[in-house]
Image (tube, rainbow, N blue to C red; front, side, top):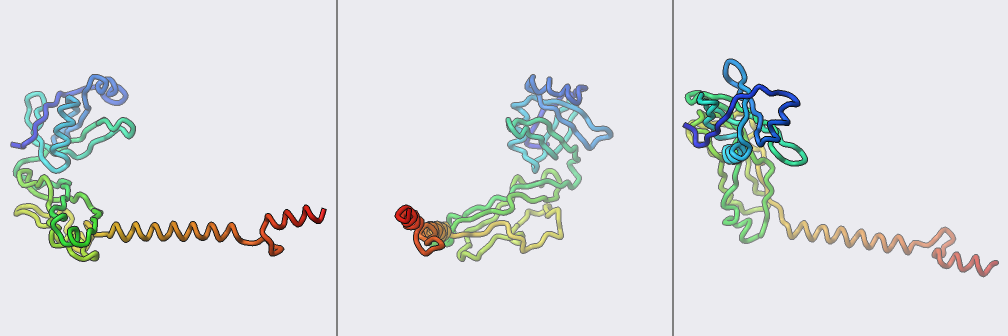
Length: 230
């Protein structure tokens, strides 16, 4: 039994008619994985809550008009302007079968590292999620990586630093272990570099304004000479 539950109702409306469902506070969805895809709807607030908690990594118990189905979220369509959920795709799964899911990577304890405490370095995370394979009950909510041992500006967190629980493995076994997940940078050094660039640019602008005209005089002197000649 999954931790998250969502009630669905079957629907017949499709295409442009889905707009009327959304106006009533319903989210259209499709459940794949059975003999035939099931077209359904669910209440917006309840769906938004479940999606926020389950993400693409935790199984959801679907109740489709009394028929139970275990599923994971495969895709969520979002309106680019309103940011509201437009449509959800679920993939029906079986409790005893290995499935693939996208899991967040969470870096912890960086504040306790020498890199943070002594040198005041900051961290930038390049990879925030990764695909794993496991039985539904073993799918992790997230993957934590301990950053407390980071010291040097050259230290990095890579795929090789990922520790998975028993029964969980990376979906892509050919993933490079040295692929960088997170790296460090020095905010103070970068700020000083930007200030130096801005100062140099300002100095160049001043120098350009003082460049003499073709006759060896500044523009103002040239104009004065022309007036005197007249």
